[in-house]
Length: 359
Ligand code: NAD
Ligand code: GLY
Image 1 (tube, rainbow, N blue to C red):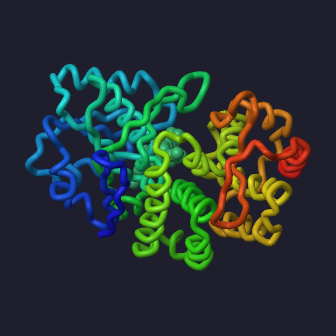
Image 2: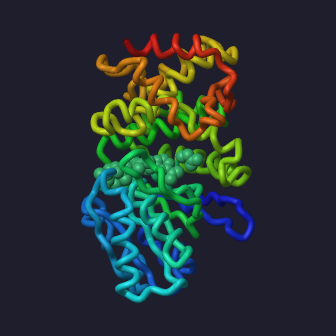
Image 3: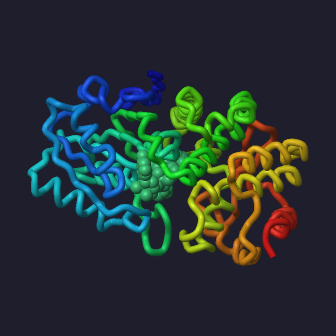
């Protein structure tokens, strides 16, 4: 088993990564499950892994709440259903929530934990690759509003993260590749050596080789933990975790969140960020080619659907959360392994990048 710690003083917490960890849940999570426990999962994940998790926690009497699957359920209504259950069961402030699922379950359960009686403890048991390398780590919790994704939320760190790599066996191929997009992101923004490793080991990762997966998850978590420890609430540095996301969110919104997965949109967005970086920061053209080659090798998109219009994308990019005083800030690459967040790019260069990808 591998272990990474998110260092946040007295709120520091461990991330456990390895095969067969659900069976060890009592040892790993038991000490962190104070008081009453509610496990929240969904209609896809619960039939697969809820029993294994509960069997791994034989001395803990847990309640369970199973919600419908899907991003459309990442809402205040689902959060309220969790809170209602906690109240019905007379859960006190010493209770713990357990999020068993992908990023949707993790985000909504974490947000319910942040709000219930002004904040109770929770642990993450992420079951998608994306959740194991990104959403379960770092304490961003949120639900969507009709007018915007992740617009209602809180920073609330979990007490522990348990990532059992065995559960990735049942993950659909497309979801796996979408998770790899976020893994590639860590190489690009912070870890050139890891990017080299990904170039050499992508086949193993896509074949779900256990050692490759555990290594990629560990290094991704190490990179994210280092950034979150330095800038928990995104005063500056943490924004580099959004490489490709300003373009990506615009793509997702333009497609109504229906046809592309988040990781796919981020992949195309990272390709666009690399293109713009070459025009702005001196990011070498040879590295733009490396970025696109690795994304393509992963089976991720580096072009946009033909229906995409560049004026529409530009308009959608303007509502990005990184906009400061009306000026859009973008995450760009100086070199592989080094990202910057900057408002210093020429509008004409951005137009050039948009024109390269969309009509
Ligand atoms: P998801 O939670 O919707 O999971 C994807 C699909 O896989 C779902 O149908 C799910 O039920 C299913 N699934 C989950 N585990 C499975 C398994 N082991 N086997 C088979 N099927 C399984 O999506 P996601 O990609 O995990 O997360 C996306 C969400 O995460 C978005 O809402 C995004 O905003 C959020 N997110 C949050 C952060 C953060 O820092 N909090 C970071 C990145 C993304
Ligand atoms: N997923 C971006 C962040 O956690 O900051």
